[in-house]
Length: 230
Image (tube, rainbow, N blue to C red; front, side):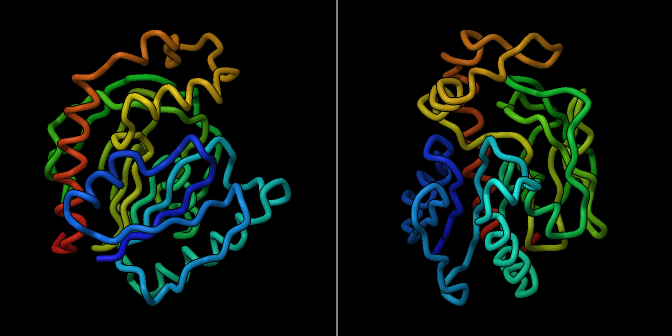
């Protein structure tokens, strides 16, 4: 399997998604939009992963590469390619499927629980009823037509969705290792203003048990999602 990822900033890498690919001997390559780039040959990709970032999906004047990225995602969707979107990536995926992306009721930054519905499907069946996950987002999205909600939190109704058998969006982060979390804090600490769903930086780090639990679930999720028998 050849996995290709879209990375928007240096400090939001595939993290443990890359670790899963390595463990399973999958080829992995990436497009880095923060440096000169060339989009890949879409016909040579088996799974597209779209990572997060601090920009908004509608900031195309500031980040003109967003237009090219969205065009590529739409093409991949038309082909029925398996696609996983994480945080900003989930918002881009929702947008390309016709969902509206907009500011959420509250920013959600830090470790907060999400809940999965009893009728969760496909790869989402690997998750427990509730799970503490890492968040860093201000925007959210309306559920695209044809997509099914797969997770929610206290302040964000659409934390995850599944679109038919080949596209999944995760608003939250289960791919981040400790170094990834520290990197996001370092580069985005200006967002750590008081709020009901914004943790202090010192509470976000040193959560080895949660990170390891999420990593194990991520690997199981990717095992199921990559099979496409959802």
